Amino acid sequence: MRRLIEKGLMYGNLVPVRSPALVARYNRALKHLTGRETALGDFHIDISGYSPEVGAELGDDLYLNHNGVNRQFILLSLDQARAPLLNAQFSTSRDILKQFIAANSAELFALTAQDAVAGELIDSVHDVRTPERLMAIGRIKVEADTTAETVRKAARLGEMIDQFKAETDAWYDDVLIAQMIGLAKETGDVVRNPVQLSQMSFEQSDFWTSHFGGLFVFRDVEAPAVLGAAEIADERVIPLSDRAAIAAWLQENALVEPIVKSRGIDAAGIIRQKMDFLLVSHAAEQGDDVAGADRRALRAMARRHSGDLPKEYTGLEALHRWATEGGRWPQISSDHPAYFYALRAADVPQRDLVNRLLAQLAPLDVRQLFICHKELFYQRYGTWPDSKRAFVVDFLAREYQVDKEGARQALFGHEPEMAEPDIIERVGPWGAVRRL
Image 1 (cartoon, one colour):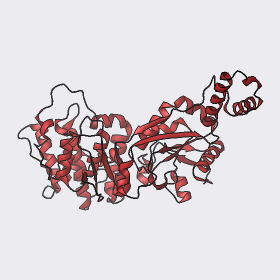
Image 2 (spheres, one colour):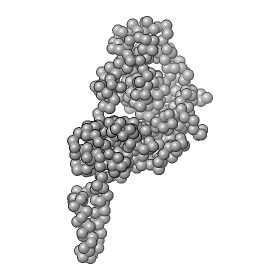
Image 3 (cartoon, one colour):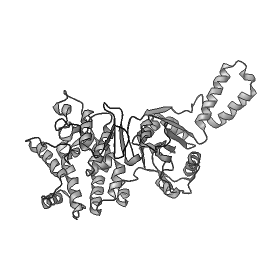
Image 4 (cartoon, helix red, strand yellow):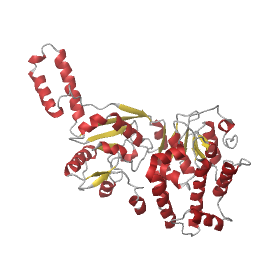
């Protein structure tokens, strides 16, 4: 993983915690949440306050995410909003934290000036010992306060102020006045400067979870389903190995579109780069040194392996030929290895989750795998030949890292609809897919 770390492709954009004051605040919050502390004086944290260095020290990568549910978080700075979420157990957790920070930025700026904010993403499930319990996860509520409980005390002080104003003889209530003065010393003037955090909750209808080998849960679609490798006693579950069933389900819910028919993108260029990734993967497995391969080297590589290129490559090659030269539309059925490589998510609310699913179904497209499913990318990265690792790291650092938003828009962006849906959108990219 050294190459990934050096290029900022792993543990990138983490927030450094170096000053004694910040370390002390972090320890107060960590003890408040978990009863544990770190002896480190210098470490880095992600958006949730998780630190890989502290995790290594404690021997527990889930020290802020016990049982992989109800993730706890520690906020020391608004800079954490730009950090990644490491060891994600649910695909929605980072977006929830980002929205919470954005909605409370002014309040969090004031609170973190003197203390750490500690909190939790709470739902009704405290463990997922069985896959069925995942289906009980519905709404996620965010609860947070400083380690000194400033928000709770400010709310209590506000209630006392209202009581003082409402009761005609409150001026003679020495106990109430003394309590108000005591709380005001801790919270400041809550009348002029209210100390409160928005009570926020989020629907968790569609999500990916790492539990049980990785499951995709789609509930806010026309035909709800769970997709995964795990065996679940539910008729809505579709195994990821059942390509025909997944293709039919994606079509039934209008969740995908063929790349070569998508508007506003360089479809031929995207297909060409997918072909390059497939070629590099095949050549590296055959023992070729693919590190640093440029366009000329890739052409030579394709000639050298022309007789044994995988079907994924030849299928995409036919699509590329159609996109650049015209001719007959290539028929690629759902059981063809190139089928899911030729698709991308349609312009639907579940776009990111669908692209994550496609990345898992077409894992040799290393760029999409890195962008859409980092957990699987890091898992597979360790199994690659060293020269493939070198090629992929160099490509991502050169072509993606320098302009992340531009790359995402070029690959997955959508232009507004200009006409009625065509026949492809009604019956699928290569005709109607029959559910098996």
